[in-house]
Structure formats: structure tokens, C-alpha cells
Image 1 (cartoon, rainbow, N blue to C red):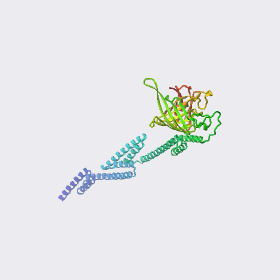
Image 2 (spheres, rainbow, N blue to C red):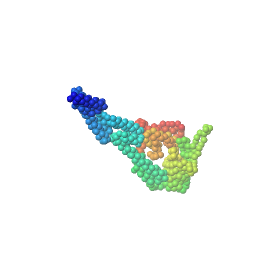
Image 3 (cartoon, helix red, strand yellow):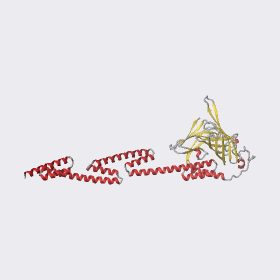
Image 4 (cartoon, rainbow, N blue to C red):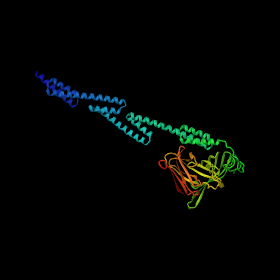
Length: 478
């Protein structure tokens, strides 16, 4: 019996030592089992209490582990539903109940991915603010690769739709411009009906109120040109219609052949230049040569003159001629022109356009003392030309022109554009300027100068930000 008791005590001590070792190693369930084996061999009230405490903690830990597992499973489900932010919240809550190294690392990786996604999304927002939309979309998509976000995905879809719409609009505008340019080329060849057709095709592709108004003006011009002219009864001696020097004044048939033929000379242009023309007319075709004399001051201080020569070729339609010019040889610079004859046949306006220039001149028949619409013996003072300086300070294309002109491409100024044009003063020295858009006059101002004095010029500025005075006209000195 004593030996048996001694064996039980020894066995109990060994089991207890084993339990203590396992407890230190954190193996609580195994430690409790060893303690229970020790108690079976040798009852011990203190050890029994210790075991009950361990079992209570073990039960509590089991509950926490169960809660942690449940929360982790909920987080996994949310992540699979594309709700990573909600999932991360559940995962972190789970770690609060019970944690282990793999789960802790998983949460840390998720937080790093979310931070990267936020940084990329912020970069995309800055690019979008700078109107760099395609680059912004790329950053947003990269952000989504790190962190799903339904709101961001929807925003990307909206942006891509806008980019597509802008691209389609740009393509339509480009096509409309191409058709408009084709129409203008046809108009330069005096194929007005075909030009109107192209202009209308352009309108069908992209609406343009200004072009719409211009088409109406062109159709009025076509209708007027197609209306038969009833010959008037001559009031004086007639001259053969084949005469190259025939001047207007007789019947339409008498004046048609030589209406443009002869020598012409312009009033001084924006830089003091003078243009002379020698024109010949055969039916509806107008040909001839021109010479431009440009004054300048040499290094020595002496006034000198540079001369430029060239040829023109155009088509006559009523009181207008459109065509092209070429400077010097066959390889010289080219451009387009439009001549508009004033009533009376002794003065016409020449709108000349090169690659980078656009000038307007008042041209008078050499030897003709009569001004447009008046005879030399009428006692009235002929209009004098003066160079106006026009500026468009608004943010939209705007037409600025003198009274007597109408809305058209020749007097349309782009935002910020400055231009010098030759305009004619009335007998009292006044010039009426108008500015507007889409065929509607927005402002009108009268400038008063002195006939014969080209040193005082009108300076015309359109600025629609000024609610009280959109069009200002002051006097400058040259």
C-alpha cells in the first residue's frame, strides 16, 4: 500500500510538471489535460482551482475565436460582393477578438492597397481638373485595379462617354469645315449655286447660324443675278459694246463688255501702299495685271519705294468679281480676291486674302473724277479712303465692318484679332461702323474725320464685356 501511494504521488508530480510545461508553451488545452491526470492520482484543492480558472479562460477564448471566425467569414463575403471597405472593417473587428499572424498580414496588405488606390484616384482627379481626360481615365482605372469602387467605375463610364461624344463632335466639325471650304472654293470660281449646296451640306453636319445667314445672303445674290435686266433708254450718245474703254452709263448690254476694263488705282492701304490694276474683260472673264508700290524708309533715312507685280484671273458675276492672283513668276505667292463695284462703275472695293494677310482697298478708275453714284459736275465731294484699325477683344468671332458692307467671311475677326482695312468717308468725313454676330448688329458707332486727311484714322474696338459701350471708336494718328 505504501509503495502504491508512493507511485501515485510520483505520477501526480510528473503529470503536474508536464501540465506546467505545456501551460508555459501556451498549450492550454493540453496543460489542462495533464493537470486532470495529476488530480486523478492525487487530489489537490489548489491545483483543482487552477484548472477551473484555466478551463474558464479556455471557454472564453473559444467564444472569442468563434466570434472572430464569424466576423472574418462576413468580411470575406463582403469582399466577394465588391465591397472591400466594408470587408476591411469586418476583418479588423475580427482581429479585435482573436488574431493570428496570417490574418494580421492580410489586413495590413488590404490597407496598403486601399492607400495606393486613393493616391491614384487623387492623381486622376488632378488630371481631370487640367482637362487631361484620357490620362485621368487611365489613372482611375489603375486605382480600380488596386481597390474596387462602384462610384469610381460609374464616373469612369461617364467620362468615357463624354470623350466619345467630344471625338464625334470634333469629327463632325472637321467634316463641316471641309464642306464649307469646298463651298468657298466653288464660290471663288463663281459657281454660286454649287457653293450654296456645299454650304448646306456643311450645315446638315454641324449647325452654324453665321453660315446660315451667309447662305441666305448668297441666295439673294443668286436670285438677283438671274433676274433679267430690262434695257433702259439711252439718254445720250452710245458707244460700241465692244469698246474696251466703255464706261457705265448706257444700257446693260452696252456696258457689260467693258464694265471692268481699263486702268485703276487704289487709295493708300494700311501701310501706305498703292495698288494699280490694268484689267481686261471678255464676257464673264476678267484678266489683267497689278502693281503694288510700298513706301519705306531706308537706313539712310531716305524715303524709297518697293514694287511688287503680278497677275489676276477672275470671273464676273453682276457687280462682283471673284478669282485668284499670283505674285511675280509661276512660283510666286498666290491668294484670292473679291472685287465689288459701287453704283456708277468708277469705284470698287477689293478684298484681297493671302496665306497670312487680309487687306481691303478702295480702288478708283484712273481718270475718273466721279465717285460712286455721283457725277463730276454734281458739286459733291468724292469720298476719301482712310485706314481703320479694327480689334475684336471679345471671346467669340465677331463681324466688324463699315456701313454699306454686310455680314460675311471677309469681315469676321477671331477673338483677339487685329486688322487694318481701308474704308471710305462720306462727304462730311464720317464713317459708320457696325459690329455683330449671326447676322444681328449688336452695336453701331459713327467716327468723324476730315476728308483728305489720312493722318487721323479711326480705331475701332469691340468688347462685349463692357455692358455700356460694346463698340468704341476713337481717333488715332499715323
